[in-house]
Length: 272
Ligand SMILES: C[S@@+](CC[C@H](N)C(=O)[O-])C[C@H]1O[C@@H](n2cnc3c(N)ncnc32)[C@H](O)[C@@H]1O
Image: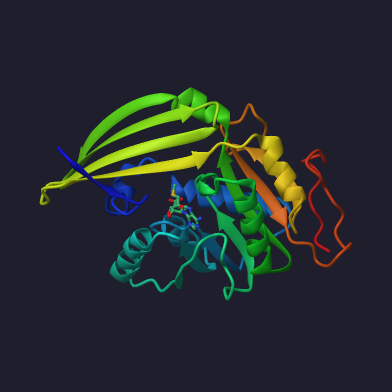
């Protein structure tokens, strides 16, 4: 069957929550809050960047935070809007690329979860995003993002095909890793029961060396306060499959000690 090509998430958005139903968003939100708390930070007004269909937004709202969401995909935001409308929860949503956030904020907390940062394909994109995110945070405040590592790609997504049937649709996925180019590809073919055509979309993520991510953070307006393996408080490294990075926008130039990537993780940050 001929497939109609779509941009990433244009077709997937409608089935994303089903495909990701194994993800424990309450646990993930709780872990991120625990990471913030470790540095003495207690979010009150957060923005979830690359919020997708809003699952983390719902969790943060449930935890009592004032939250907003932003994403580059109109289709993902539309699903988030429908979910909000169904529950009566009011959360502002913005159609924004991570690299263009002017006009948002200010917030005391920013998040970007579930390897959304891996969609930034060049170091320049990382620099631009970090600079923009810093600009929407109040001085002294915090940002957490996570990335997938090469270990994750090699262990789980080197060359994997799967398919599944859900309510009203079926999909096939081929995940493969280009080790030389450090690109993770996920190709989806999605078929809705009530439509003749199949949709195809190809997701490309860059799998950065951990040291390169740290170098970009060090070149950014942020201070790196810690990097954490998976859903633990152990230090993140190339041996991790996922790493959460905790960043702080300095209170003012020179007011915050540079922790650096090799600072002891056990020393809690003292807010200035
Ligand atoms: C794997 S999904 C994660 C969504 C959500 N954070 C979650 O945990 O379910 C990746 C998200 O990143 C968004 N995204 C990718 N590149 C982006 C960019 N440059 N700016 C903003 N959002 C982006 C996609 O639209 C998608 O919603």
